[in-house]
Image 1 (cartoon, rainbow, N blue to C red):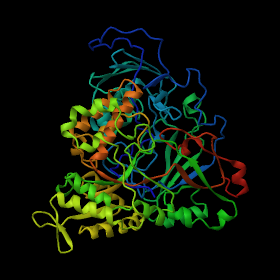
Image 2 (cartoon, helix red, strand yellow):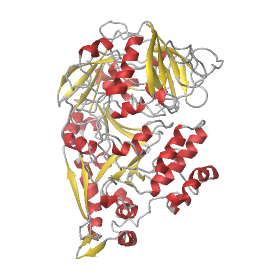
Image 3 (tube, rainbow, N blue to C red):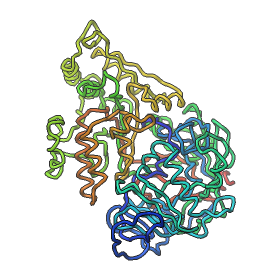
Image 4 (cartoon, rainbow, N blue to C red):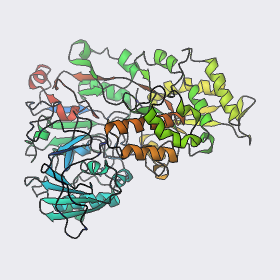
Length: 633
């Protein structure tokens, strides 16, 4: 079981990646702009950028290691958007405008757009040229000059030029989703030098990551968006230039993306072995069981299972017994990020960390893992789970150097062993932990009045767990029973996806369930997760409402890090502060993808190591297997 829901952001993780930028080469001066510092020497225009260290792939590389350059083209992939597909509504869509806050756009619209550069998923933090053949970077990191490929084209055959790039960056900076606007906040200008040269100019206040976040943003057609209002929802597919385009679709039912067979970039190394399916279809289902039945019949051909109960008990249908459907586990070595129930600390009743900690102590993970999850999971402990950035043991000397200046503003536990969730007795009713929880609540000013816990004014402490997945009810109800033993009135509220998105956007909840997945190199997006400014911005990912100057300073240290070691040290310090703040009830994680698939696919021997599980982009249809199962075509 994985958590679900979040503010809608059609620009998914596969498009906006957690990157940061450093480079060694300079650009020419930009007409009309003040020149930067003296320019350093370099080795020539760069084919890629990496945050720390050397690029893995040389200029003449043939493709990424997790893609099979010889993969055949053809066939179809049909799947259901996963229920945890945060930032997008997994059960419906009502717009194809994927770059604004308004409306619900379908997942994978990012496949329709090209960007200046693309992410390499066999490296922790590198991008390589797509529309941009090369890039030159000034020594001060404020001028990024991109040399575009002459062959870049939109789907209508019109040329993609520097005008389109500059127009896109300035439009997104002004009118896109708040998440995108924050990425481009320090973009000063986008200047066209000629048809194939464009400069992104930054203010000098940007983080090292900001330029590399910008280069993976979508490029829009200036001609198209001069005629159409960018800020309106629409079911008209926009003109784009990527490897796929929207084809058949029905609101609330399905959307199909068709491979662009004359895609201009299909022979570039960054696309070798990618975009192999002729059709990628997403089917939307209101009920999980209906979706599962569609998979059993072959109407859906790929299914990643996120319910431990269903994985353990419900895979006994004929197609599986006959070998037509396979169950497989693919290793997931990516940073697991943070999954949990997040408190809305904007609300008075959750402002005291002792209250948040007490509520957390009432969750018996050991009982839930044994009784509900078939021992498939381990407890999430860190905001950087399964990563070197997770704090462990006592703070190191470099961590202490970041924390000590704030000792007066931090709880003492930050300076001890990294906060771990207690191991319960597995009974479902751990009396010692519940007694500790009651002591914390008493210290916070609550007292028992009959069977209710009330504050100093006599108001009862109540909690509503908000979710849009009915699968969470069986997990939350036992938790609620323990909270009721403490005198807390708790309830589970199931709402439809549209209402769920709206309430999270407006921070209209007590507690919500969410998973945040972070990359191996942290970028500007962590401001959206934990920064004080984001806490007050509707639609941001700072669901907990964290507004702490110490957190802000540690975020700044992370984003200013000159080496991966410095970034890791600052992240560990931040992890200690966040965990000691008790902003969440950590949930669970597992180190594999549990997947069921009809045996009609091929896939690379080596999977991507960072950020994504790229089924849509690197798997392929095996014609012989499909023919054998009567599923060819």
